[in-house]
Length: 208
Image 1 (cartoon, rainbow, N blue to C red):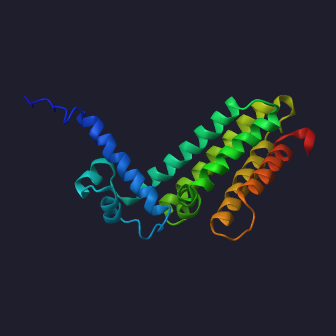
Image 2 (image 1 turned 180 degrees about the horizontal axis):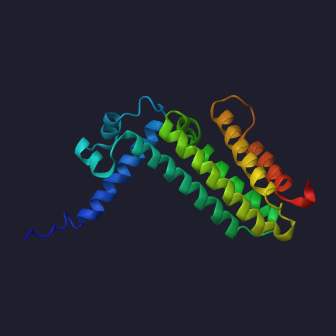
C-alpha cells in the first residue's frame, strides 16, 4: 500500500499544486502582457514563477495551454466584475449597464497587462486566436442575455440582438486594442461613454 501524502508545513499536496499553478498563471500573464507572446516561453515563465519545468508540466502540457488558461482567467475576471456591477449598482437599466461597462474598461486599463494579454497577444497564435473567437462569441451571448434582463420587452429581438451584440463586443474589443496600442488619444472615460451609448442604442428597440 502506498503511504498517504502528508501536508508540508501545514499545506496539503493539493493546495501546494494549486499554488504552483497560480504562480505559473501569474508569471504567464506578466510576461504575455508586457514582453509579448514570442518572449513568453516556457523557460521564461518558469524563471519568473521560480519553479522548475517539472512543476510546469504538473499543470500544463505546454506553453499554448498555459497561455490559453491565462486568457481564460482574464475573461472570467471580466465576466465576474461586470456581472457584480450589474447586480450591485442602483438605478435604471442605462445606469446599470454603464456601471458594468465601466468596471470592464477599468479592469483592462488599470492593469494593461490584462488588456494586452486578452485582446492583443491573443491574436499571436492559432490556439489563442481560436480561444479569443470563442470568448467573443460567449461575451456576445452574455450581452444579449443582460440586455433582455435590463430592457425587457424593449430589448432588441432575435436575430438582430445577436448581430448587434457581436458588433458591440467586437467593436469594443478593437477600440480597447487601439487604446492599448496608443493609436487613439481617447481615455478610459471616453471609451465608457462610447460603449454605454452603443449598448443603449444597439440593444434597445426604443432608442434606435
